[in-house]
Amino acid sequence: MHAFDPVREDKFTFGLWTVGNPGRDPFGPSVRPTMDPNHIVRRLAELGAYGVNLHDNDLVPFGASASEQSAIVKAFKQTLADTGMVVPMATTNLFSHPIFKDGAFTANDPKVRAFALQKTMRAIDLGAELGAKIYVFWGGREGVEADACRDPRTAWHRMRDAIDFLCGYVRDNNYGMKFALEAKPNEPRGDLYLPTTGHMLHFISTLEHGDMVGVNPEVAHEVMAGLSFAHNVAQAMACDKLFHIDLNGQKIGRYDQDLRFGSEDQKGAFLLVRLLEGTAGGPGYEGPRHFDAHAYRTEDEEGVWAFATGCMRTYKILKARAQAFDADPEVTALIAEQTDRELTPLLTRGYTIQKAAKLKELEIDVDAVASRGLGYERLDQLMVEHLLGVRGG
Ligand code: GLT
Ligand code: MN
Ligand code: MN
Image (cartoon, rainbow, N blue to C red; front, side, top):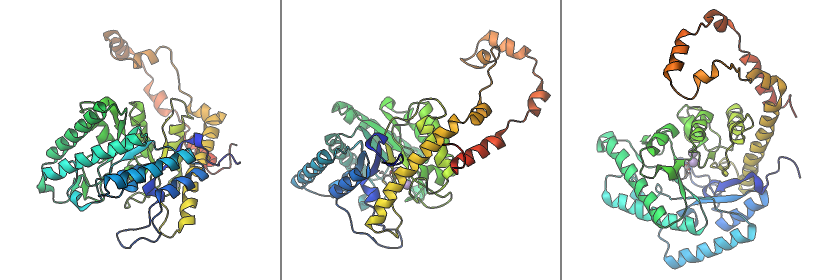
């Protein structure tokens, strides 16, 4: 067994919709046959994954009868038991069916909003039955092209009503689930409401039960918005709101590519893994490392498993590189915090009138401080050399 081979303890998960993606795109149909969810679970278990996540309709087709659903769920639970795989996260498909063409929770037609709540409550029941403790909300259709159709403030209030309602539902049923909200700037709608993780974090602060709601940031979505993914994730971690994460790869300025993790922007991926693993200090992320990505359209089923293995291996390779980087004495010397016993207490733990007076009196040699080189060129080059494998273990 090699150090980069995935094992259960790594907590790698995939959505049924990710490895199950048949390669359909806006310009052409499927290129791979649809895979049975039980087959997906078995293959992922063999590859060393920890679990699978799903939308209600990834497992139970839209419109299935109660008896059809119970037969499907029974067989699926058996497969989970046989393989030791878990379902840490579940979600609702509120975007595929034509009823959601104008959104789900934000749609103008109250019947659509009622159906969205009904479908989500049923999907939450399904998630709870499968043991999911995280419930994701990705508002794929919660957006607009003809902006005059609704006041964007109304969309925001409808979204808040829906999440408040569903928090109540989970609490009432003692499901012990937490919600994780996933932002995206656009696609499939021209503009999506709540377009970035930062918007979500603020939105959460306005909720009735905001304590049970966090975020599920996705690499591709923040990169589409031109943002630093690691910075978004860091802000969520700093306020204990990183409840889940969608790992993948993305080129800036493109459609939502959902590429193999680490296949693009290796520096961004390195900084992300370094943050999640806490190799530079500070608490790391404890939840599942979920890959929300899919294989290239060029691939057959074998290529899909190569894709899945690639996501997990690259994560582990980057983790090893991050550990070596942060253990490198030249790196630690360059990023060592400068401590100053007199100044540091003035700069932390809030305002006092005494601190204000002291700060106002301080004599700082502005030219001396301003002329000091910081060595960040060397630091960044060291990171590149670790990343390229010519330095460190
Ligand atoms: C869809 C989307 C993803 C979301 C999934 C959860 S579904 O594939 O592109 O980003 O995370 O609803
Ligand atoms: Mn996603
Ligand atoms: Mn995506």
